[in-house]
Image 1 (cartoon, helix red, strand yellow):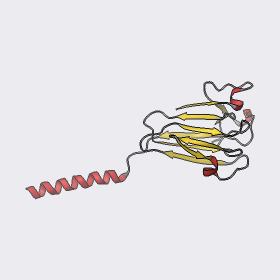
Image 2 (cartoon, one colour):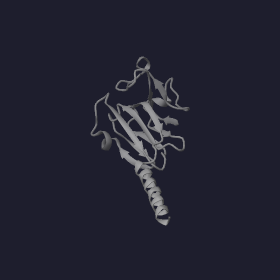
Image 3 (tube, helix red, strand yellow):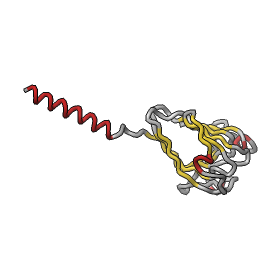
Image 4 (tube, one colour):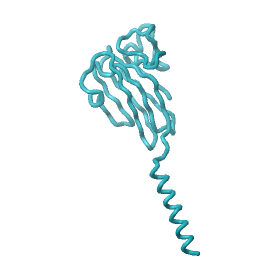
Length: 158
């Protein structure tokens, strides 16, 4: 998985996000409202105006915690489809909110891009997981049904 960002604190001061974003912990974070969900560290946007996550080919599902997502608004582009933060998280929220997001596409995940609306506002991501979701059980049942029909037909032919 590749994650890169640009703009905001990401490209100023002592931070450079040319090769990705910052992994922060509570002791080293210059921000409030963003935090580690699992008590170690998190991927911080560093107030980047844009961050793209590009899962490797073959993955169909992704999940992650997002902290502090909607102080100033923003939007997602998931496989080219746009979603406003307000549509997902509700109206403008206070600092420090946390949500778990799940994304699934049976054809395989495309790029997930997160856009921020304010150079002085960002978010944190934690416990990002990607995986493949097996075919639905209904396909297996359909296959068993076809096998059963084939066996019934062969019995009838004897």
